[in-house]
Structures are given as C-alpha cells and as structure tokens.
Image 1 (cartoon, rainbow, N blue to C red):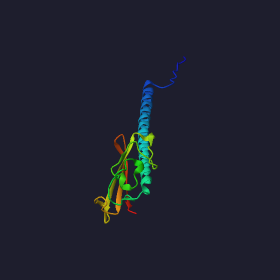
Image 2: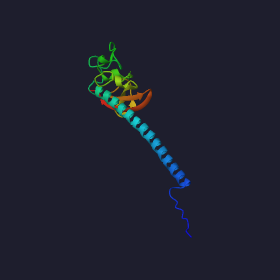
Image 3: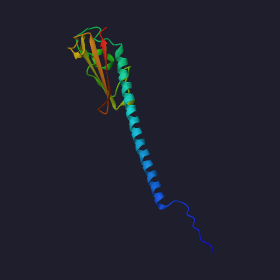
Image 4: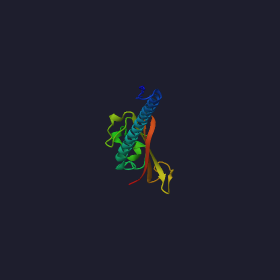
Length: 165
C-alpha cells in the first residue's frame, strides 16, 4: 500500500499575520522618524538663519562709535534729524530699534527673510559690574543685545560688550 505524503510548503496564516504586523510597525516607525528629522532640520535652519542675522548686526555696529562723533554724549537713540537708518552714525542710535524685515551689515533690507525680525537694545554698564545697567551715557561701556524672532517667536539672541573709543 502506498501512503500519501503531504508536503506542506509556504507560511501559515499566523506567520503571515505576524510578518505583516512587524512590517507595518517598521514603516510607522520610519515615517515618525522622518517627521522628527524634518522638524529638527527646520529648527536647525531657523537657528542658523537667526545666527546669520545676529552676525549681520554685529558686523554693522563693530566700527561705529558708541556716541555721536559730532555731538558727543547728548542723546541716547537717534539724534534730531537722523530719521533713517542710513543716517545712524553711532551705536546708541540703534537702541530700541526693530528691523522687520531684517537688515544686513550694509544696512540694506534682506528681503528673503521677511518672516524674521531683529530687535536691538543698547545699554550703558557699570564699569565695575557688567551686570548693572547705569544711566544713558553714564559709563564708557555698553552692552548690545540682539534678539532675532521669526513670526514674533524668539529664535536666538546674542549679547556683547563694547567700550567707548
């Protein structure tokens, strides 16, 4: 008598179901990771742009005198007649200014960055304690603070100290 042998080939339904679930979970994890990487890349790009805009103002203000070269220490902020950015001739003219869209080191508007803004604060500091703000023109040291925002959300800021020269 010949016995019939049964050859079982392939996967069972349970094995196929488990493989499908594992592949589905792997794809879901890859999609979530891709979304996280994209968000991190966008945040890094925004931070890089903000740092660029801070450096533009640092470069612009590096060679400016701290106080008006003609009038000396009379007004903190723009002097009378200094109605445009092109006429700002000293560092204290920039106090309290916000540039939106931002400006470059050459004082030109950077039209490609319209969602960003630069806010500048200039304060005189106590020579013996740089954490202490003193009255306008009350010392030879100033602290410049630049805050760069995107769509009114602060992205980055920087502070540096200059001495009157």
